[in-house]
Structure formats: structure tokens, C-alpha cells
Image (cartoon, rainbow, N blue to C red):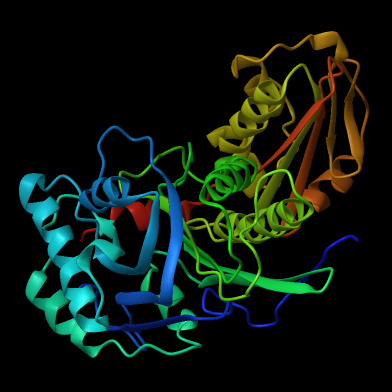
Length: 405
């Protein structure tokens, strides 16, 4: 029997059974209406948990702490702050991350080792521990607190990013939910940004690690906003088993359904990040088909979507397709110029490596849309991949030239 997977209206990370969350304003970010900058995600029962982490060789203290504690069979909570990344703070940063976990553990009545930590914001600033200590005491956990948690994670994000799906398979049902933040310093490799995923399904830990890696590879690893990878970023998944099913093993019908649902949630959140890129006005989708390998297809798509020249052309609705061809040519993947086909929207601009006449006004109108599709067929193999990004506007420079001022 095929699984039935449906999005939950207003779904979030606390949609699965047994998860609660809450957030408060502790004073780490500039005060604005409804500001939140400190939050906790909590499971009423222990979870099997795992994560993937930034490949930046400079790793923020919370990343180091989480890598030490994961994978785990008894994780119960995540505490997160925005406004300060707790990165490049040496031994004091590690001590502060551990203390942050201890404060959250005391608040919710669990062991400090059962708490994971994340921070996002400015690099090189020490955590204001007095603010965090006071703020954690103010957090109130609730079944719908995922919405507040999503807002507390935001830095330059303009909108919270949340999703949840129900999965019906046979006579069983479980839910996967998630929240994410990310708007700048986005160019993933394993993971870049913050994302918490939860499920009330019971899942075998070895399969959970594999499922998360697969989901991240086709979603978060295929987005790019500015080519920078943060020291702070991670994706965590927690499974508490309150759906009552037997633990889902690898290579089972339930595993296929779980993977499909996890992929769906991760893709939704990843595209939400790309769409909300700093200063962005358009979502760019680049689809590369018939590459020699999956690695080639992914690299070609990511190179095009992260090209500043392509991004600037899309912002200006300029059908300068040569920039796309140049990007794939420098990507390092195998290409044969005489075999390349290129489309923007439904307009073919290049066929078998040769430029075609096209209606410039028609392509300009396509590029003026809120979503721009670029399709490149390499005609060399059978591999396909898709990447997402955004255009490059003057506002991006404004945001990042004044980030700490």
C-alpha cells in the first residue's frame, strides 16, 4: 500500500506528538515589535537523534558540543539563541555552550547531556550569559510553541520557515515537522543554516542517520544564496516514537514512506530559505539533466545558481544566457559544447550548442516573474539534479555592509 503524505495547515516542529516549544526576548537582538531571540524545543520522552553539520573548518562552540553528543538515544531538547553565533570564542565559547545546555536542562528538568545547543548571529562576540540565564527562565513551553521558536531563530530572515506533514501507511500514522532559519551566509555542504526536524515515529538510529543525509543532500545541500558557509550551522532530527509504531528499519515499506516525507519537509524548508535570501526578489531554480553522474549534475546546478553574474542578470531580467553557459563550463563537470541545450522558462535559447533566435521581450517577461526556471540539458548521461537560489540585488550589499553597525 502506498503512503499518503499531506502537508498540515499551519504545521510546525511541534506538530508531532509529544513535542513542545517556547521562546522569549532575552535582549540579544535589537528590540522590535514581537522580537524573540531565545527558544527551547522539548520532547516529553527521550528521542533518538542525529545531525549533520557545517564543513567550515572553523566550527562554532554549539556545533562542537552537538557533534560530541550525537548521535544519541536519549536526546530531549534543543536550546537556541539568535543575535550571537558563539563562534571563534575559544575555550570560553565551549564553556558557555555547555552552560547554556545546563541552564535549559535545569529549566525543563532533564540531564544537561540530553540537551543540544545552537547559536546564530554575529561571529566573534561572546554569549551574554546573564541575558541567557534570565531569558531561559522566562520561556514557556506549549504544544503550538513551534511558531515562536521559528521566529526566535531568525536573524536577517524576513519570514519564519515551518512545515509539517502527516504520513498514513497501512493502519499507521506519524508526523514529521520542522523549522529552519537562513537568509544569508548560505552555501551548503552537509548543512548550512539551522534546522530542527521532529517526528513522533519510532525510527532505527542507523536508518535515521541515512535518511537525514539523503534528505539534506537533495534539499539544503542544493541551495545557495551568497557562496558562504557559516561556522554555526546544522540540521538536527529527533524521533520520540510516540506514534506507537515499531522502530522503522532500513529497506522497509515504512522506511520508503519516512524518506519521502522527510525529503518533502526538507525541500519545502530549503526552498523557503532560498526564496528569503537577503535582498532577494526572485527564487531561481536550476535543473541540470542528462549529466554523466549525480555528482556532475549537482555541481553544475549549484555552480550556476551561485554565480553572482547569473544572479545579477536574473535580478535585472537580463536574458544574458552566456553567463549560464560560462558557469557550467567553469564548474569542472564534463561538458561537450555541441551537445548543450538551454532553456529559460519554456524558451529554448541554445540547441546542440548553437544559439537560437528568440523573442527577447518574452524571455524578459519570464525573468520578471517571482520564480525563474533555468533548464540545462548536457546530453551526456542519465543523471539529473536541481538547485535553488535567489537573485542578487543592491539590498544584499546594504544588509551585509551594515550588519554590525
